[in-house]
Image 1: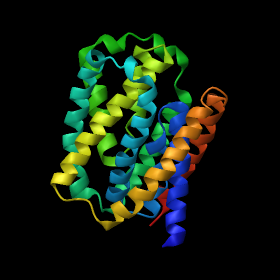
Image 2: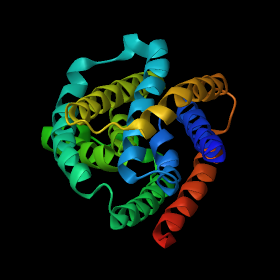
Image 3: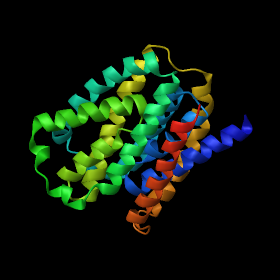
Image 4: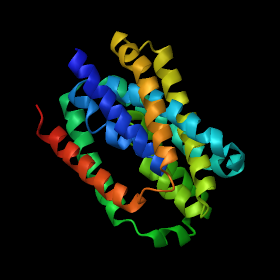
Length: 245
């Protein structure tokens, strides 16, 4: 049990460091490994709860950059997606095929991250409310089931904001609101068990350290190199989930 706790905390530390450096990636990294030790449902709830703590830590520095009007449309889609994900996770969250689905999804996310070009920022798609709502719906559903919906929101906010502080602030605000909504639904349903609380409390301490180290190195580490390294790790973890029994 102690060995498992150390491994889980190490995964959370690395994931939170990545989030501090890049603004996202905690769920993408952590969900590649946590389901090897916990159920998919417990992994998702733990990551969603800790993501709120990480995002609050980051948002504290950029709170004035939030544009509530701009994020309202994508949040409508995202919260709708979280309602669907709540029922899906409670129905299929303990099944082995759901972990394999996550493996496929992680690999697809990595391919997206590695092939996305910076020129995407100049796209005007973000001005289309239907497009924004669909992005929010998909990201909300995937985030609520697998806790890896971040790339969809990242894609949207990179298009909308060229200034990195505004991008980061609105991204973190979206994570906090959608995750808090999902956790409230599961709380009402009584989905939290002793395993969740066992990993949450020490996890809060370790992600505080990881996030602040990531923020400290925000201006110094080559983000593209980190992006590629993390993508390789997540790709391998996706393959492990596909081949695990």
